[in-house]
Amino acid sequence: MSTKTYAAFNEVDALAPHTIERRQLSPKDIFIDIEYCGVCHSDIHTAKGDWGKPNYPVVPGHEIIGRIKEVGSEVTNFKVGDLVGVGCMVESCQDCHPCEEGLEQYCENGFTGTYNSKNSKHGGVTYGGYSENIVVEEKFVLRVPENIDVKAAAPLLCAGITTWSPLRHWNVKPGDKVGVIGLGGLGHMGVKFAKAMGAHVVMITTSESKGADAKKLGADEVLISKDNAQMEAHKNSFDFLLNTIPVKHDANPYLNLLKLDKTMCIVGAIEPIEAVNGGLLVMKRKNLAGSLIGGIKETQEMLDFCGEHNIVSDVEVIDIQTINTAYERMMKSDVKYRFVIDIKSLKEA
Ligand code: NAP
Ligand code: ZN
Image (cartoon, rainbow, N blue to C red; front, side, top):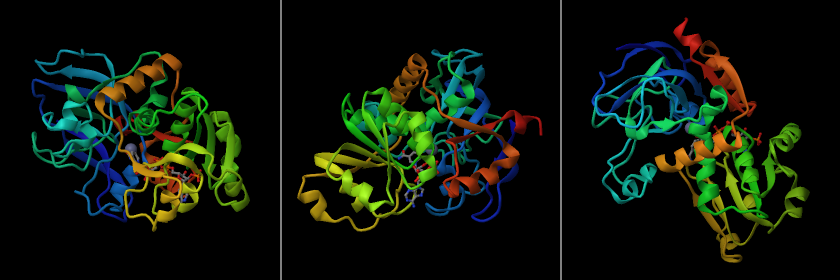
């Protein structure tokens, strides 16, 4: 099926219109008519080749919300008209230990990403949500609560689950002092979730101008990471740090903030980070960890929680024709706090 998309064709040029073919429905497939798609910093990293040369043309987008238009003959949990989401994964082996545990993101055979992944089962390369529609196996389709704002729910599929999963894994609980580093798409969801879990939340930001917004999002305090005196005042005081910085950086000043035995989890930088001072870890038995999105079961739990507590992202809705400006603004940390593409602008173009 011929489908309109926006794609990156190389590392330097702007994204531009591109037509792809979606596969015919297999018995377990679901055809989703996309309404909104969030813009993740990973889209930029991939399109620009920050993580190695991708399979151009790249159609990014893994924060997908839409309605089901058609279901395969063996689909049992969904029906035409349902409001659904697709996040960062569309397949995994379903056979290895992590898959059996519902941790498909850590599949030992490698999960198939929603875009820029070789599709071992169905052939070709996957294309994401900057697109009119998508075909995804039922197992990787999420149910979106009908009571939440659809456009503001799209970022839950990546920014939401990527912050929810580590906060849960490290058991953030009422009274914990939690720092969220970087106020962008991931960071603003981290603040909302940590607050909802009862933590005392500190927004750790390089941008003084974002302080007031951080408080509106639920932060109890704002810590400007460039201010050494402020950093010193918070030394050895945090129970958990969620680090969303999207680039290589010096992690030592942040590790300095942790209490004895506590953890900083990196979700942003997946490249080598600057040398970590082992002494900082050794002297207070601190932990430096990482976390990747979240499993399908956990993503559904997060969406259900958001439905119950009316938690969504703060979004700036854009037409797809302005996607390149959105990328430029995100690269300057100028995002409040997630761009979401109204896919109507693609359908009607
Ligand atoms: P984003 O919206 O662009 O926000 C990133 C924020 O980090 C910026 O707004 C800025 O906040 C801060 N920042 C940027 N450069 C910095 C620097 N050099 N030093 C300190 N802080 C800096 O990005 P995002 O969409 O939230 O994504 C964040 C990262 O997570 C990306 O690398 C993305 O690829 C990755 N990611 C990982 C996963 C996973 O599963 N682990 C999933 C999705 C995305 P302030 O202005 O507040 O300082
Ligand atoms: Zn993402």
